Image (cartoon, rainbow, N blue to C red; front, side, top):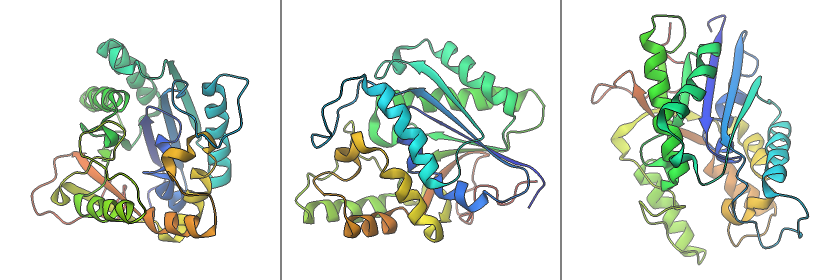
Length: 268
């Protein structure tokens, strides 16, 4: 491994960060020079709350910030730097685009990450906040890369391949849940299998990913709808999070190129 590897993840809400790269962080935690930077656009304060969660006497955003901290503590490798941009939940798509690019880009400029990960144009769940954050991060990455300084070598979009999505959707139907519809907000949206550029086997640390996920207690209705927390459900999640799938947005991936097994693979 190289002496320094900086990974930046830019997302919209608490728990967005719990899925796509938590396994990669665990796999690289002991690498010399590894640094993990996390950016949240909003604290998710306008979200819904799991009906089974006890009545709250404070704003949801404050609770979700604590859940995010608890999740990375349970995971075992908290970010080296974590920034809240403090936009209101559900309004990020209405923030002036240049402002959002500047806010994200300023942090990336300070950190000069080797790899930046965010949402793709489908926003993973078609959420407008996700789509806005992804587009602004892409623009910030492009600007950073153009300045000729050290750092940005790879831009990634978190995703779910269509064949995996179809298998998961079949499982939802078997459990009596409403199937996802691609493009419907809050439903997982797939990308074509051939667009996957990186697929990381994180099964060895899947239990740590699940441990983090389960700290997002106010969002249990989203994470595992209709299913009570138990050992069987944890085992199902261990299987589901065992592979992290990513689109390589930059540099352009030649058609038919081999799928890489790590976000840093092949970088100088």
